[in-house]
Image (tube, rainbow, N blue to C red; front, side, top):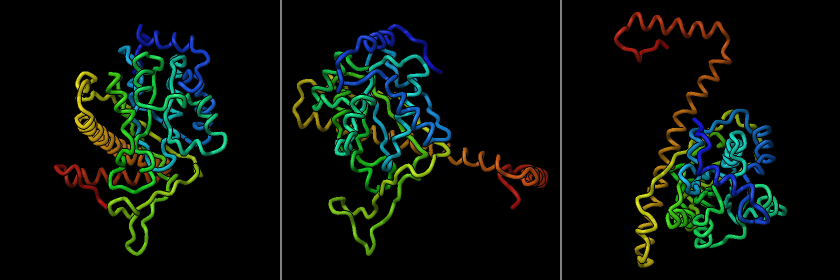
Length: 313
């Protein structure tokens, strides 16, 4: 359910309407629309976002989204679905922006595109600068995928270890709201392979698998995103005056907890995806086959009334 535009949200929307000459520190979310329209029209057949209201600054605090990167380009539809939610529900004036991996800026034209369309805060480069941006409420929504280049490696968990905890540190130090985002459905845009002859990837403590990012070569039949507010166990006050080593320890525990939660959310989505696939398969079945499957279930129920799980093969 989408919350009503309460006073706190209106304040962020007003700030967006007054937003001028701040390129590099976010853009009104409605500027995501060209990106959103292109991705959802050409790359995704059906996209769903669960509990997107968790992305809204409903309590007067800006929101920091910590996003599961997933393999390669799997995050691309997620940004489009977020943009669509904000635009469709009259939150397009809220200032938003994302922090992508800097390697993307090596592609000619990408840095300017991210700056103009996706609000990449390219003028904000340190944790302290991000903290200031959040504390001053200059931005309503920002986020990153902290796995970074680890998305290129095949770990046992879907959500790889984080390469950077800077955005999480900034969110805690600014007492900003945190929204975790997991996704499923774009794994076909990735090729996962193991190195031959028992070889391992240097510097990875024995990992053999790598992810090769494919271009969005096929339209995704179903893509799902789950949003969930996360309450950290520590606050800015808990970090104030602490030695650097203690600050790193406390933030490290928080980072580990966030990764565990993202992996748990991913498992929830994975449980939903096969169900959706089964529904689609049933829709494509000839009516005669559907009737035969139903007849088998009725026979099984009559022969084994106390065993609901039994199905004749």
